[in-house]
Image 1 (cartoon, rainbow, N blue to C red):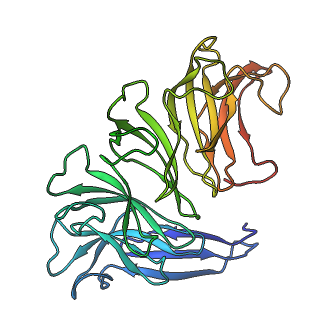
Image 2: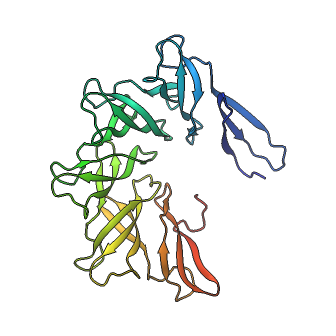
Image 3: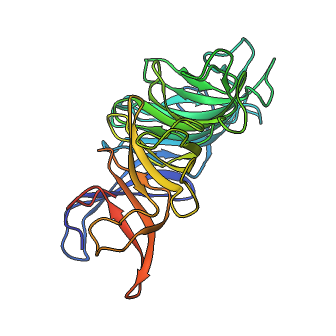
Amino acid sequence: MFTGPRCKLAFPAAAVVVLCLGHARTTHAAVTFRTVALTGDAAPGTDPGVTFKSFRKGVSLNGLGQTVFQAVLQGPGVDSTNANGLWSEGSGALNLVARQGNHAPGTEPGVVFEFLSTATLNDTGHVAFRGSLTGPGIDSANDSGIWWNGTGALAQVARAGGSAPDTGPGVVFTGFGDFAFNNNDSFAFGERITGPGVDDTNNVGIWSGPSDDLRLVVRRGDPAPGFGAGTSFSTVQIAPGMGQAGQVGWTAELVGPEIDSTNNESLWSGLPSSINLVARIGDQAPDIEAGKLFTSLNLPKVNALGEMVFLAGVTTTRGIDAGIWSQAAGRCNW
């Protein structure tokens, strides 16, 4: 039984289709379909005669029902170096965002996209994606990055081998994996760095902000706020999701005086200018009987309001040894 509008994606072998389920209180829900693309259709942004051959997994849509997807092409001039592309309805019509073999903006002449992945479409209709590169001067130190089309044209957000903000001269990103992208066109990601003064104690960080003003939120080796001198982050791992104001969450292991295996795991959240402790093993678990202490903390998830939900272990009594805690009191945001 559905009590509100929901949208789901259906993935036939030869089409991208949006399936919308309207208000319904019986098993005979009214269903409407809108075909987005079919194999054999002309592929927007390509030469005459070039069509969609197949569609890749990972089709998604934003809150406005606009879709983003990857497809494989066929037709005149298509080969293994340019057969893959990324399309979006974010502009109001289906348009090519990026294509394998096309020049990657922000890179040297002759450098092109080799692979496209991890595409996200926000509610402003802007697309961000992770890509890998090939071409002159490209090696494992500079062959990946993040691009987006929110400036009116495709532009680079960050790249392996590019300067890592707030870390010092010569310090660069070593590669790019998953990232978060919100409806205010801000990004968040956790990555490794290398360069002068960087070693195994400070080679990981988390960044957040708009494409033209990314700021360091936290870095491995930073002092842990609220703790005594000498207590620092020995590990940091970013959580999935981010708030619309740019808030991020992460797990961290602490090291320092009076830190041991009973109190070294912690959860944090915040912005580049302000970070806060959310939970720590050894602390009393909230909203539960006294004496229930956190014994383990799993990677949380962050919603659009910057609130966190996480699974944690607690000291065992009365058969209770774990629970789920949420900062979103009285709401279901997940």
